[in-house]
Image 1: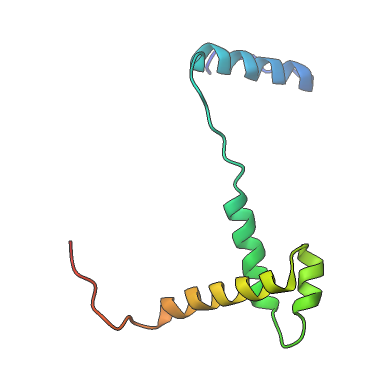
Image 2: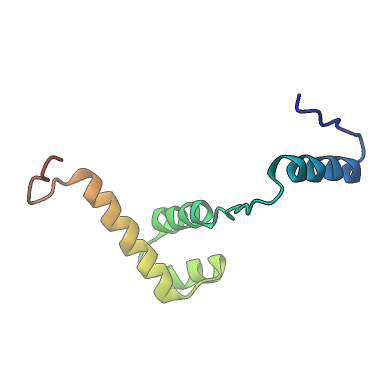
Length: 95
């Protein structure tokens, strides 16, 4: 318990959270990421898994991106998947 009393009304809860943040983090800049990377990686994986010959325009419409972007996503995920299972040509140097 951090001294924040949770009220039953959403506005009261929002005010309590704002008061808590102000009291504990006043004067500091706080960055809250939008987590677009996670959302995009989930979308990109769906595109990769559903890609089939001739359906790129359909996927582009469904995901709201261009057909070219669908192919770029597919190639990028394909390369990452291959890199997981295929050894590199040169042994990495140990640090």
